[in-house]
Amino acid sequence: MKKGIQIFLGLVIVALIYVIADMIHTPLKFENQLKERNAAVIVKLKDIRAAERAFKSKYQRFTNDFD
Image (cartoon, rainbow, N blue to C red; front, side, top):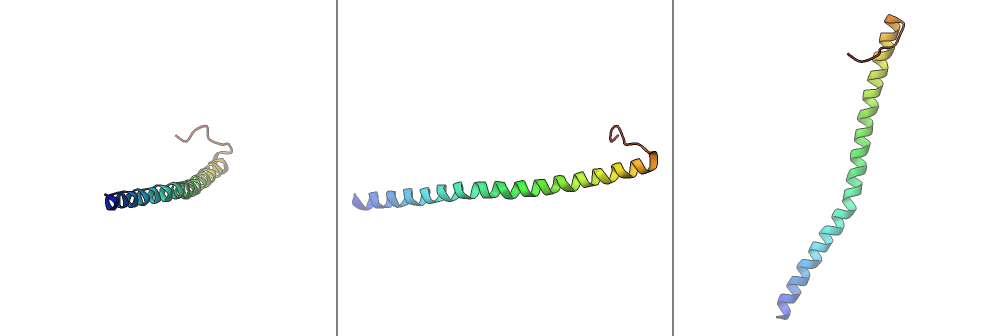
Protein backbone atom coordinates (compact mmCIF):
# COMPACT_ATOMS: atom_id res chain seq x y z
CA MET A 1 0.00 0.00 0.00
CA LYS A 2 2.80 2.41 0.90
CA LYS A 3 4.58 1.68 -2.40
CA GLY A 4 1.40 2.52 -4.38
CA ILE A 5 1.05 5.88 -2.63
CA GLN A 6 4.71 6.70 -3.36
CA ILE A 7 4.23 5.90 -7.04
CA PHE A 8 1.06 8.00 -7.17
CA LEU A 9 2.77 10.95 -5.48
CA GLY A 10 5.70 10.61 -7.88
CA LEU A 11 3.33 10.85 -10.83
CA VAL A 12 1.62 13.88 -9.28
CA ILE A 13 5.01 15.58 -8.83
CA VAL A 14 5.95 14.91 -12.46
CA ALA A 15 2.59 16.29 -13.63
CA LEU A 16 2.98 19.43 -11.52
CA ILE A 17 6.49 20.01 -12.88
CA TYR A 18 5.10 19.77 -16.41
CA VAL A 19 2.29 22.22 -15.63
CA ILE A 20 4.65 24.75 -14.04
CA ALA A 21 7.14 24.50 -16.91
CA ASP A 22 4.30 25.04 -19.40
CA MET A 23 3.09 28.08 -17.45
CA ILE A 24 6.57 29.59 -17.67
CA HIS A 25 7.04 28.75 -21.35
CA THR A 26 3.69 30.14 -22.58
CA PRO A 27 4.41 33.88 -22.03
CA LEU A 28 7.88 33.49 -23.53
CA LYS A 29 6.42 31.87 -26.64
CA PHE A 30 3.82 34.64 -26.89
CA GLU A 31 6.53 37.33 -26.72
CA ASN A 32 8.46 35.67 -29.55
CA GLN A 33 5.34 35.44 -31.72
CA LEU A 34 4.54 39.08 -30.97
CA LYS A 35 8.00 40.19 -32.09
CA GLU A 36 7.70 38.20 -35.32
CA ARG A 37 4.27 39.66 -36.09
CA ASN A 38 5.41 43.21 -35.36
CA ALA A 39 8.38 42.76 -37.68
CA ALA A 40 6.09 41.52 -40.46
CA VAL A 41 3.75 44.48 -40.00
CA ILE A 42 6.65 46.92 -40.16
CA VAL A 43 7.83 45.39 -43.44
CA LYS A 44 4.33 45.65 -44.92
CA LEU A 45 3.98 49.27 -43.80
CA LYS A 46 7.31 50.13 -45.41
CA ASP A 47 6.12 48.55 -48.66
CA ILE A 48 2.90 50.57 -48.51
CA ARG A 49 4.87 53.75 -47.86
CA ALA A 50 7.10 53.07 -50.88
CA ALA A 51 4.06 52.41 -53.08
CA GLU A 52 2.38 55.61 -51.91
CA ARG A 53 5.49 57.66 -52.59
CA ALA A 54 5.85 56.16 -56.07
CA PHE A 55 2.20 56.92 -56.84
CA LYS A 56 2.56 60.48 -55.57
CA SER A 57 5.68 61.11 -57.61
CA LYS A 58 3.82 60.02 -60.75
CA TYR A 59 0.37 61.58 -60.18
CA GLN A 60 1.19 64.42 -57.69
CA ARG A 61 -1.39 63.11 -55.21
CA PHE A 62 -1.87 60.19 -52.86
CA THR A 63 -4.24 57.32 -53.63
CA ASN A 64 -7.69 57.10 -52.13
CA ASP A 65 -7.55 53.31 -51.96
CA PHE A 66 -5.29 50.45 -53.03
CA ASP A 67 -7.56 49.15 -55.78
